[in-house]
Image (cartoon, rainbow, N blue to C red; front, side, top):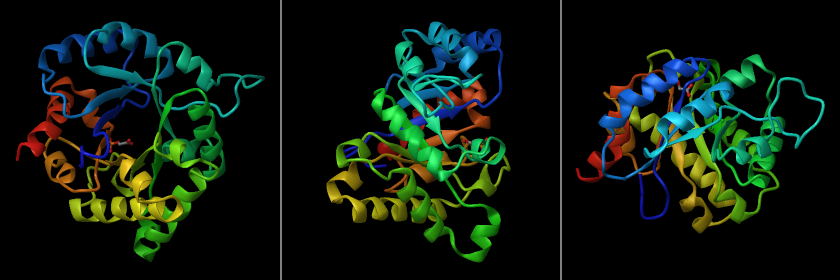
Length: 260
Ligand code: PGA
């Protein structure tokens, strides 16, 4: 983390979990557990259907409600999809883009990710852009080249001012939902590499302003070590964000890391 130059963000990714009723129950359970210290932004990205329920239930708390995906077009004949403007209109700020599950199951590519980032920024949303290598790609030793390609394609066409509004989430696919976390050193190496790529394309000021999160089996046991790394500015958390006590602890973690 480096709070002097950029935001620390603890974001939950609920994927296809919890009904509206369970969302309200989660909110009631977590509210009394939330830390008063504000060393990070706290976000939960929930299924689109439950955004309104989550907003209502978390109103007045420090947790913001985000979305898990959006469509790249502003409107039109795209049955079942939702546009950036619709999310902005109901007060959503954060949206996850290009999660590996969207890439794997719904044909999202680096090119559609680029278009979705454009749509999000145009609607004044903050995109949390997911990138990461597969186990096979890591075993081949091509992760640095791959990550450079993914990030550069994703942010193609963005001005430096727009780049500063993008959040990147490095999520090695082999660590998602597997209980296998990247070591803090592995995660730091890639996050620093991503920042170096942004520096090369833009400049040092832009690169140091971008929040880069780690995701992949982050939990209450490993978060402090990951967040202690200079280029890891938070987490995108799946499984552990579904449990109120765990997620509250994760929101508290940046303050603890900062205070040593
Ligand atoms: P996980 O998911 O924390 O359950 O590994 C992270 C993610 O997919 O964003």
